[in-house]
Structures are given as C-alpha cells and as structure tokens.
Length: 241
Image (cartoon, rainbow, N blue to C red; front, top):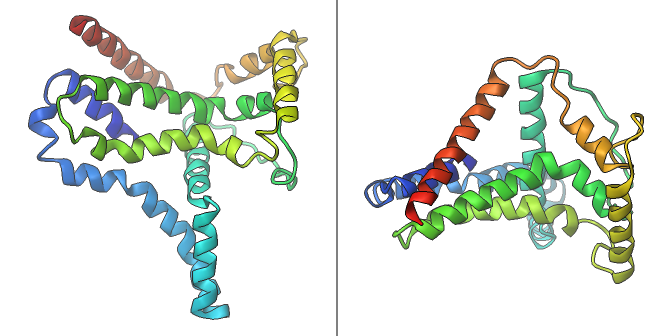
C-alpha cells in the first residue's frame, strides 16, 4: 500500500497521472483501503469469541468500544512495527526476543525514549511518505488524486501521532517541560561507549546505524534504489521550478 504513494508521485512527475490514474482509480482505491482490512481481521476474531460467549449485544459493545477508543489507529501502528522488524530480520538476521513491559499503558514515557524507539521504524518512513505525497499533490493536475491516496496520508499520520496519543500525561504542561528538559539532556550527553540509546543521542545514533553483519545484497540494493528515486525526484522538481 505504501509503495503506491511513491508510484503515484512518480507518475505525476513524468506527466502520466492524467492518462493512468483515471483508468486505475478503482484498483488503487481498493488497495488504499487495505489497512482497514487488516483492522477488521484484527477485530473479528475477538468479536466472534465475545459473540459466542456473551451474545450479539456484548459483541457489538466490544466493537463500539474498539472504535471509540481509536484502537484501529493502534492496529495500523503496530502492524508497521511488525512489518519493519520482520523485514529487518529477513534482510539481516540476528533477531532477539524482548520481554514486553506491562507498565506502558499506565506510565508516562519521555519524548526522547519514544523518538529513540520509533524513529527508524515509524517517524522516518512517515515523514518520507508525507513528503513524497506532498510533492505529488502539489504537482498534479488531477483533482481526484487525494481521494486515491487519503488512506496513505492517514497511515503516515498514524505512525507519527499514535505513540503520543497513547502516552499517559503527554499533553500536561508539567510533563511537556520535563520531556523538553530530558530531550535536551539526551541530546547533550556524550557517548561513553557503554551508554544506552536512551541515555545519549550519540549512543542511539551509533547503535542504530551499526552495519549489519549478516546483511545480504538486498539491503544495499534497496537503499540504492531509494537513493536513485530521490535523485530523480530532485531533478524533476528542479526542472519544474
């Protein structure tokens, strides 16, 4: 689904959106709704179990609670986390099991810890997709482009917002000041070589950008392809200015 955003922007930059998008609007629109299919696939098993145990009223109440608590946004977010680390494991190997913390939903997580945890898997791809879609939207002559890509915009926004939406006391002034001070301290703390990613920005950068020892040819090939895409994107934008 995410690759469709890159494809549409590429079509816009080569002036093929007018001849291609109207014919493929239905197929692109169906693909853009794929995250909703994932959400339904996540809800239906639990709703079916509650239907068998508590009846139709209990099942409908469960679905209503899921929707009103914005749980579908969380499902979209967690699906990206699974996809990112699954792809990383397939590409590089060396996966490890980490015991999940049960206190995440009841304790406030500082901003710098959220950034260190989700920047490579969610924040960077989200900003990347939003920038690409914005370029396509700004250069297209098709008024229907946003109707074909609105779900991709929503997915990217979910990746940016959900960690803070489910973070307790994230918008309280006292917590905001503490997070700002902690983030400033995190950025200024030097890496001692044994620092954890949540103690120092330098340590986080060093650990995040380690060269995988088991990487095959797929990793550099994918990076090279994305690099060439952005070189072409910049060249086309420069030609239109």
